[in-house]
Image: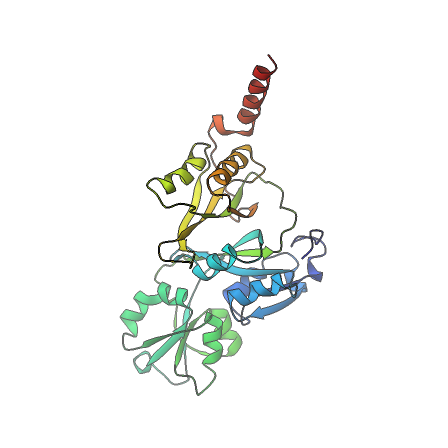
Length: 320
Protein backbone atom coordinates (compact mmCIF):
# COMPACT_ATOMS: atom_id res chain seq x y z
CA UNK A 1 0.00 0.00 0.00
CA UNK A 2 1.60 3.28 -1.03
CA UNK A 3 1.61 6.37 1.12
CA UNK A 4 -0.81 7.95 -1.29
CA UNK A 5 -3.37 5.17 -1.14
CA UNK A 6 -6.74 6.41 0.19
CA UNK A 7 -7.50 5.39 3.73
CA UNK A 8 -10.40 3.02 4.24
CA UNK A 9 -13.64 4.92 4.31
CA UNK A 10 -12.61 7.39 1.58
CA UNK A 11 -14.56 7.80 -1.64
CA UNK A 12 -12.23 5.26 -3.30
CA UNK A 13 -12.58 2.61 -0.61
CA UNK A 14 -14.68 0.47 -2.92
CA UNK A 15 -11.65 0.11 -5.24
CA UNK A 16 -9.51 -1.40 -2.50
CA UNK A 17 -8.76 -5.05 -1.83
CA UNK A 18 -9.23 -6.24 1.73
CA UNK A 19 -8.28 -9.47 3.40
CA UNK A 20 -9.56 -10.83 6.70
CA UNK A 21 -9.43 -13.89 8.93
CA UNK A 22 -11.74 -16.25 7.08
CA UNK A 23 -13.55 -18.16 5.86
CA UNK A 24 -16.69 -16.21 4.98
CA UNK A 25 -19.04 -15.71 7.89
CA UNK A 26 -16.46 -15.07 10.60
CA UNK A 27 -16.90 -12.29 13.12
CA UNK A 28 -13.88 -10.75 11.38
CA UNK A 29 -15.83 -10.46 8.14
CA UNK A 30 -18.64 -8.79 10.10
CA UNK A 31 -16.06 -6.30 11.41
CA UNK A 32 -14.72 -5.65 7.90
CA UNK A 33 -18.20 -4.91 6.62
CA UNK A 34 -18.39 -2.04 9.12
CA UNK A 35 -15.58 -0.29 7.20
CA UNK A 36 -17.19 2.23 4.82
CA UNK A 37 -16.94 0.99 1.24
CA UNK A 38 -15.84 -2.54 2.16
CA UNK A 39 -19.13 -3.99 0.98
CA UNK A 40 -18.25 -2.81 -2.56
CA UNK A 41 -14.59 -3.81 -2.40
CA UNK A 42 -12.81 -7.08 -3.17
CA UNK A 43 -12.67 -9.19 0.00
CA UNK A 44 -10.29 -12.15 0.29
CA UNK A 45 -10.58 -14.53 3.26
CA UNK A 46 -7.27 -15.71 4.76
CA UNK A 47 -6.60 -18.92 6.64
CA UNK A 48 -4.83 -17.24 9.57
CA UNK A 49 -3.86 -13.86 11.00
CA UNK A 50 -0.32 -14.31 9.71
CA UNK A 51 -1.61 -15.14 6.23
CA UNK A 52 -3.81 -12.02 6.18
CA UNK A 53 -0.97 -9.74 7.25
CA UNK A 54 1.42 -11.34 4.75
CA UNK A 55 -1.02 -10.47 1.96
CA UNK A 56 -0.78 -6.82 3.00
CA UNK A 57 3.00 -6.92 3.36
CA UNK A 58 3.38 -8.50 -0.07
CA UNK A 59 1.01 -6.03 -1.75
CA UNK A 60 -1.67 -8.59 -2.63
CA UNK A 61 -4.15 -6.71 -0.42
CA UNK A 62 -4.39 -3.04 0.55
CA UNK A 63 -5.50 -3.67 4.11
CA UNK A 64 -6.44 -6.46 6.51
CA UNK A 65 -8.92 -6.81 9.36
CA UNK A 66 -7.88 -9.08 12.22
CA UNK A 67 -9.00 -9.54 15.85
CA UNK A 68 -6.77 -7.95 18.47
CA UNK A 69 -8.66 -8.01 21.78
CA UNK A 70 -11.64 -9.66 23.41
CA UNK A 71 -13.51 -8.35 26.44
CA UNK A 72 -13.41 -11.82 28.04
CA UNK A 73 -10.06 -13.27 26.96
CA UNK A 74 -7.96 -10.13 26.53
CA UNK A 75 -5.43 -9.73 23.74
CA UNK A 76 -5.37 -12.07 20.75
CA UNK A 77 -1.83 -13.41 20.96
CA UNK A 78 -1.59 -14.37 17.27
CA UNK A 79 -2.23 -10.76 16.25
CA UNK A 80 -0.11 -9.14 18.97
CA UNK A 81 2.85 -11.30 17.97
CA UNK A 82 2.38 -10.87 14.21
CA UNK A 83 2.32 -7.06 14.33
CA UNK A 84 5.24 -6.81 16.75
CA UNK A 85 7.78 -8.12 14.23
CA UNK A 86 8.33 -8.19 10.48
CA UNK A 87 7.67 -5.37 8.08
CA UNK A 88 6.07 -2.37 9.77
CA UNK A 89 2.27 -2.12 9.64
CA UNK A 90 -0.07 0.70 10.57
CA UNK A 91 -3.45 0.55 12.34
CA UNK A 92 -5.97 2.80 10.58
CA UNK A 93 -9.06 2.15 12.67
CA UNK A 94 -10.62 -0.17 15.23
CA UNK A 95 -14.00 -1.91 15.03
CA UNK A 96 -16.08 -3.39 17.85
CA UNK A 97 -18.34 -6.40 17.25
CA UNK A 98 -20.73 -7.87 19.85
CA UNK A 99 -20.18 -11.61 20.03
CA UNK A 100 -22.97 -14.20 20.17
CA UNK A 101 -22.44 -17.95 19.83
CA UNK A 102 -24.61 -20.93 18.90
CA UNK A 103 -23.90 -24.65 18.99
CA UNK A 104 -24.48 -26.33 15.65
CA UNK A 105 -24.47 -30.11 15.32
CA UNK A 106 -24.94 -32.81 12.73
CA UNK A 107 -28.64 -33.42 11.93
CA UNK A 108 -30.47 -35.54 14.47
CA UNK A 109 -27.97 -35.14 17.32
CA UNK A 110 -29.04 -34.10 20.81
CA UNK A 111 -26.70 -32.42 23.32
CA UNK A 112 -26.05 -35.75 25.04
CA UNK A 113 -24.96 -37.31 21.72
CA UNK A 114 -22.15 -34.84 21.00
CA UNK A 115 -18.73 -36.45 21.30
CA UNK A 116 -16.46 -33.66 20.03
CA UNK A 117 -16.91 -29.94 19.38
CA UNK A 118 -14.70 -27.60 17.36
CA UNK A 119 -14.25 -23.83 17.37
CA UNK A 120 -11.60 -21.11 17.68
CA UNK A 121 -9.72 -21.11 20.99
CA UNK A 122 -11.09 -17.70 22.00
CA UNK A 123 -14.66 -18.82 21.31
CA UNK A 124 -14.10 -21.98 23.32
CA UNK A 125 -12.81 -19.95 26.25
CA UNK A 126 -15.92 -17.75 26.10
CA UNK A 127 -18.27 -20.77 26.07
CA UNK A 128 -16.35 -23.13 28.35
CA UNK A 129 -18.68 -22.70 31.32
CA UNK A 130 -21.73 -23.49 29.18
CA UNK A 131 -19.98 -26.48 27.62
CA UNK A 132 -18.94 -27.90 30.99
CA UNK A 133 -22.55 -27.64 32.17
CA UNK A 134 -24.33 -28.94 29.05
CA UNK A 135 -21.90 -31.10 27.05
CA UNK A 136 -19.31 -32.22 29.63
CA UNK A 137 -18.62 -35.39 27.64
CA UNK A 138 -17.53 -33.50 24.52
CA UNK A 139 -13.87 -33.27 23.53
CA UNK A 140 -12.67 -29.88 22.30
CA UNK A 141 -10.86 -29.72 18.94
CA UNK A 142 -9.36 -26.30 18.02
CA UNK A 143 -10.11 -24.64 14.66
CA UNK A 144 -8.54 -21.67 12.88
CA UNK A 145 -11.82 -19.74 13.23
CA UNK A 146 -15.41 -20.26 14.31
CA UNK A 147 -16.52 -20.22 10.66
CA UNK A 148 -13.90 -22.79 9.69
CA UNK A 149 -15.28 -25.11 12.37
CA UNK A 150 -18.79 -24.60 11.03
CA UNK A 151 -17.72 -25.30 7.44
CA UNK A 152 -15.90 -28.44 8.57
CA UNK A 153 -19.08 -29.72 10.17
CA UNK A 154 -20.41 -30.31 6.65
CA UNK A 155 -17.60 -32.81 6.00
CA UNK A 156 -18.69 -36.28 7.20
CA UNK A 157 -15.04 -37.28 7.66
CA UNK A 158 -14.33 -34.60 10.27
CA UNK A 159 -13.47 -35.84 13.75
CA UNK A 160 -16.10 -33.66 15.44
CA UNK A 161 -19.88 -33.59 15.30
CA UNK A 162 -20.62 -30.09 16.62
CA UNK A 163 -19.25 -26.58 16.18
CA UNK A 164 -19.49 -23.32 18.12
CA UNK A 165 -19.98 -20.46 15.67
CA UNK A 166 -21.90 -17.27 14.97
CA UNK A 167 -25.64 -17.41 14.30
CA UNK A 168 -24.99 -15.84 10.87
CA UNK A 169 -22.64 -18.54 9.61
CA UNK A 170 -24.90 -21.30 10.94
CA UNK A 171 -27.79 -19.74 9.01
CA UNK A 172 -25.72 -19.27 5.83
CA UNK A 173 -24.63 -22.90 5.87
CA UNK A 174 -28.04 -24.28 6.83
CA UNK A 175 -26.67 -25.99 9.94
CA UNK A 176 -28.81 -27.54 12.65
CA UNK A 177 -28.61 -25.29 15.73
CA UNK A 178 -29.13 -27.20 18.96
CA UNK A 179 -28.41 -24.34 21.41
CA UNK A 180 -28.38 -20.54 21.17
CA UNK A 181 -26.72 -17.76 23.18
CA UNK A 182 -24.21 -20.12 24.75
CA UNK A 183 -21.58 -17.54 25.67
CA UNK A 184 -20.70 -17.33 29.35
CA UNK A 185 -20.73 -13.50 29.22
CA UNK A 186 -23.82 -11.97 27.65
CA UNK A 187 -22.19 -8.69 26.58
CA UNK A 188 -18.93 -10.02 25.17
CA UNK A 189 -17.28 -7.81 22.55
CA UNK A 190 -14.31 -8.41 20.27
CA UNK A 191 -12.15 -5.57 19.04
CA UNK A 192 -10.75 -5.75 15.51
CA UNK A 193 -8.21 -3.52 13.76
CA UNK A 194 -7.77 -2.49 10.15
CA UNK A 195 -4.08 -2.58 9.18
CA UNK A 196 -2.16 -1.44 6.11
CA UNK A 197 1.43 -0.66 5.22
CA UNK A 198 2.49 2.70 6.72
CA UNK A 199 0.47 5.58 5.28
CA UNK A 200 -0.88 8.93 6.41
CA UNK A 201 -2.22 8.88 9.95
CA UNK A 202 -5.93 9.43 10.58
CA UNK A 203 -6.46 12.95 11.91
CA UNK A 204 -6.79 13.46 15.64
CA UNK A 205 -10.41 13.54 16.80
CA UNK A 206 -10.04 14.11 20.55
CA UNK A 207 -11.14 10.52 21.16
CA UNK A 208 -8.21 8.50 19.89
CA UNK A 209 -6.01 5.55 20.72
CA UNK A 210 -2.31 4.89 20.08
CA UNK A 211 -0.89 1.36 19.87
CA UNK A 212 2.75 0.59 20.60
CA UNK A 213 5.16 -2.32 20.90
CA UNK A 214 7.79 -1.59 23.55
CA UNK A 215 10.67 -4.05 23.92
CA UNK A 216 12.27 -4.32 27.35
CA UNK A 217 15.89 -3.47 26.49
CA UNK A 218 17.24 -4.53 29.88
CA UNK A 219 15.63 -6.63 32.59
CA UNK A 220 16.29 -4.95 35.94
CA UNK A 221 14.25 -3.89 38.99
CA UNK A 222 11.97 -1.02 38.01
CA UNK A 223 12.31 -1.55 34.24
CA UNK A 224 8.55 -1.71 33.71
CA UNK A 225 8.03 1.26 36.05
CA UNK A 226 10.37 3.33 33.88
CA UNK A 227 8.13 2.62 30.90
CA UNK A 228 4.90 3.31 32.76
CA UNK A 229 6.28 6.55 34.23
CA UNK A 230 6.58 8.00 30.73
CA UNK A 231 2.78 7.81 30.45
CA UNK A 232 1.74 8.63 34.00
CA UNK A 233 3.98 11.72 34.27
CA UNK A 234 2.23 13.16 31.21
CA UNK A 235 -1.34 12.18 32.09
CA UNK A 236 -1.65 9.50 29.39
CA UNK A 237 -3.96 6.68 30.44
CA UNK A 238 -3.36 3.11 29.25
CA UNK A 239 -6.40 1.09 28.17
CA UNK A 240 -4.40 -2.12 27.64
CA UNK A 241 -0.91 -3.41 28.46
CA UNK A 242 0.21 -6.99 27.94
CA UNK A 243 3.56 -8.72 28.02
CA UNK A 244 4.44 -11.14 25.22
CA UNK A 245 7.55 -13.31 24.76
CA UNK A 246 9.86 -12.23 21.95
CA UNK A 247 10.64 -15.87 21.18
CA UNK A 248 14.38 -15.16 21.26
CA UNK A 249 15.04 -16.75 24.65
CA UNK A 250 13.24 -17.55 27.89
CA UNK A 251 12.39 -14.45 29.89
CA UNK A 252 12.75 -11.99 26.98
CA UNK A 253 9.51 -9.99 26.61
CA UNK A 254 7.99 -6.98 24.91
CA UNK A 255 4.98 -4.95 26.00
CA UNK A 256 1.96 -4.40 23.75
CA UNK A 257 0.27 -1.15 24.77
CA UNK A 258 -2.86 0.82 23.90
CA UNK A 259 -2.72 4.39 25.20
CA UNK A 260 -5.48 6.99 25.18
CA UNK A 261 -4.64 9.85 22.85
CA UNK A 262 -3.12 10.70 19.46
CA UNK A 263 0.52 11.24 18.50
CA UNK A 264 -0.48 14.82 17.58
CA UNK A 265 -1.41 15.42 21.23
CA UNK A 266 1.47 17.12 23.02
CA UNK A 267 1.28 14.77 26.02
CA UNK A 268 1.42 11.68 23.80
CA UNK A 269 4.26 13.01 21.64
CA UNK A 270 6.27 13.83 24.76
CA UNK A 271 5.59 10.37 26.22
CA UNK A 272 6.77 8.70 22.99
CA UNK A 273 10.00 10.69 23.05
CA UNK A 274 10.60 9.56 26.61
CA UNK A 275 9.85 5.95 25.68
CA UNK A 276 12.24 6.10 22.74
CA UNK A 277 15.07 7.18 25.04
CA UNK A 278 14.43 4.09 27.18
CA UNK A 279 13.60 1.64 24.37
CA UNK A 280 15.02 2.80 21.01
CA UNK A 281 13.42 -0.19 19.24
CA UNK A 282 9.96 1.08 20.18
CA UNK A 283 7.45 0.28 17.41
CA UNK A 284 4.69 2.81 16.69
CA UNK A 285 1.67 1.01 15.21
CA UNK A 286 -0.60 3.99 14.78
CA UNK A 287 -2.91 6.61 16.23
CA UNK A 288 -6.54 6.22 15.20
CA UNK A 289 -10.10 7.09 16.35
CA UNK A 290 -11.58 5.10 19.21
CA UNK A 291 -14.57 3.05 18.11
CA UNK A 292 -16.54 4.09 21.21
CA UNK A 293 -15.71 7.80 20.64
CA UNK A 294 -14.98 8.21 24.36
CA UNK A 295 -12.78 11.21 25.09
CA UNK A 296 -10.14 10.92 27.83
CA UNK A 297 -10.09 13.15 30.88
CA UNK A 298 -6.86 15.16 30.61
CA UNK A 299 -5.50 17.02 33.66
CA UNK A 300 -5.11 20.76 33.04
CA UNK A 301 -1.32 20.62 33.32
CA UNK A 302 -1.15 17.96 30.57
CA UNK A 303 -3.25 19.72 27.94
CA UNK A 304 -1.73 20.92 24.68
CA UNK A 305 -2.14 24.49 25.96
CA UNK A 306 -0.10 23.71 29.07
CA UNK A 307 2.71 22.19 26.97
CA UNK A 308 2.74 25.22 24.64
CA UNK A 309 2.87 27.60 27.59
CA UNK A 310 5.78 25.67 29.08
CA UNK A 311 7.66 25.79 25.76
CA UNK A 312 7.15 29.57 25.51
CA UNK A 313 8.28 30.05 29.11
CA UNK A 314 11.46 28.04 28.52
CA UNK A 315 12.19 29.83 25.25
CA UNK A 316 11.86 33.13 27.09
CA UNK A 317 14.42 32.04 29.65
CA UNK A 318 17.00 31.09 27.01
CA UNK A 319 16.55 34.41 25.21
CA UNK A 320 17.51 36.22 28.36
